[in-house]
Image 1 (tube, rainbow, N blue to C red):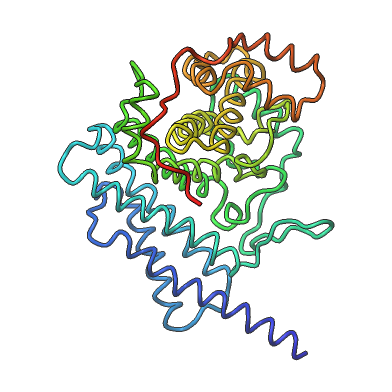
Image 2 (cartoon, rainbow, N blue to C red):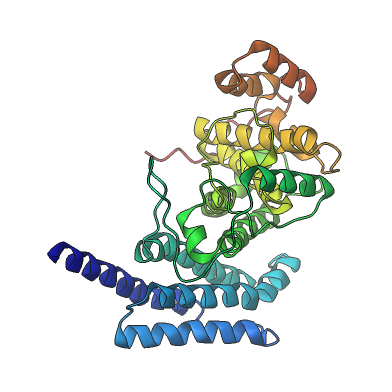
Length: 374
């Protein structure tokens, strides 16, 4: 009996801690003039903030109320801030106040995702499945019977080939606890906004796009956005892992479906390309084999999904293949494949299909890089 009481007290403490810490998340947008045309979104934010105020005063005795608070405020915030972010990005962040706005939005996105992973997951009792344990899910709402995984994957891959997008109803094999807490589409949207914004800032500062800069130019201009590069990759990793997986640490295994690589929509696929290019730039800055390997893995996965798993989709592979060449070309990809693909015949076939030459003739800069930390 005493143990049950103690467990209940611990659960109450975790919920109340989550409520207390959420005040700092809300405060990140203090002073920001949000899009007044998004009335419904602003109402959701107000309802979420009001719920937090009530629970802060009286305590949070129901996980359902905490879950509702989070989903209302975060869902509303993503809609209410979108126009601001889009306008600043379309101006390439040149208008007075644009850079300050980006900094504020990044603080909001970072604080929200950290709070969800640290406090909300614990307060709702969500954990990853371990061995034979049942996965814990929020109990506040009745969910429809899940679509069988094989059928979900088939539908996703068919839709990817057609270029259609989101699949909020398919949670994947092993969804991230924070995705269960906030709902998968909201968790992905939150981290996509963070990762994409980091890429847009990088692209603006470094001149990515038409007439991409040389490696030497990138190694100098990217120093100013180094922190954004790392933050962007981490956020895209959370997008790719939302429905299960470990995209930034898993190996370059062959796959038969795009979902095996965390690609459940065209947004996931674009994120993979963004993160791969950001990892390449970090390799130029740090001369780190870890960044080089990650860039090779993500860029090869992107090319493999587009050319093999989504053949005929029409997506361009020009820039990713160019970057694979700069990362070491055929030999570098072969080295990665050898660790996981195993069969020499399969590796030879893939290398022939890729059509990569040896390392690009463009020399990797020998100076101007920050030394690797540690």
